[in-house]
Length: 172
Length: 326
Image 1 (cartoon, one colour):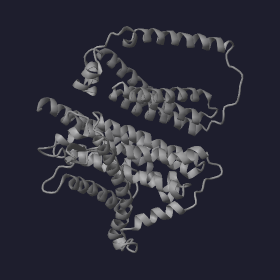
Image 2 (cartoon, chains in turn blue, cyan; image 1 turned 180 degrees about the vertical axis):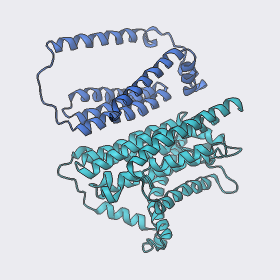
Image 3 (tube, chains in turn brown, red; image 1 turned 135 degrees about the horizontal axis):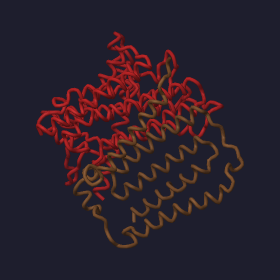
Image 4 (cartoon, helix red, strand yellow; image 1 turned 135 degrees about the vertical axis):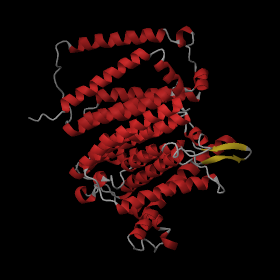
């Protein structure tokens, strides 16, 4: 009972936040609404017993990445967004198609979850709390998923090198 | 029912104690400052000026709230709360004493022992930065904006090294829970095994709480008050309480990670915990009274080019020691 109330509260926070991101005319308020959405998502992870993922969601998305967004918005001092014409011809139709595509993917994933099929995954909450949340993620990242994990590392490294090259002072 | 009462009691004692301690830190800071500068300090209100923080609080409450005409009013009013709430919430995972028996139940003296404890503190610290950035932006004035940008850049840079400096202890203890880390120090405090980690932690802690010699965000000679220049009355008070709360929380983290937390001979655990936290706080004040301020580029250079490589080195050395020596 309490946990489903918690879920509905977080679901409302997350969706209202997400709509507000698009709806606010001022970019700064959009950024704040996006932070609210991320915090709501972290709460949802927490209600799924994924403490590590929830906290990392807050540290990385809600604080580090959004802080960069906030910096950019604050420094370039965007005004309120004017009502303007659509930029691409047929933008609305393309948007609808893209939305539908994402929705169908999500629907397919939803239909294969344990909620619909009744099948449970290999890490139900009891097992996770027995082995330890962080320990399981650490073990899986360095055994079963070591290749994607390393690939991510390379990707991030390339990003850092790119940032250094762009920011380098060009002295003659 | 009893469980609920105990939880309520813990919350009241924990957060009430934290707020009271934060208020009295202003008194301690002024007395310590006076001592170092051979002055008397506040001694008029109550014995040794002990009622001074309460008098200050009442005064601030009755002052007029001034909101600049060009300010973004919603964010301007909300920003101090955005700083205070995470600063208070972060304290929830710090164990401030051994377990005690109340009404026939064993009660751990920690508000919430979660298994990702230290990461939770970093998450809260990360959210707290928003209060500073938003407050400085919403004031719509030059000095606060520069102060806010400085403090955000500084907090983000030093948070990295701060996390890295604690990683050594996490690897030795094998847990992220602060209760588990105190349990791991039954034999000896981790400062013996992690001297470099402790040094790095102390330096990063100073920068993270905007204290001298790293208090550039509020460098009064160049930026008047920094991010809170435009704030007055209770909004200003909330900012300063939040600052003292995060100082206390980081002191408590230092005491827990390196000095054995509430462990100590003879005296009860809670007293030992307070002694260790107050020792850190005294160190903060001592440094503020005796060091000049760094230049801003020196500060950033020091953070990225000295502290971060050193803390990575500490992590590598510790990892090697854990693997080969055990």
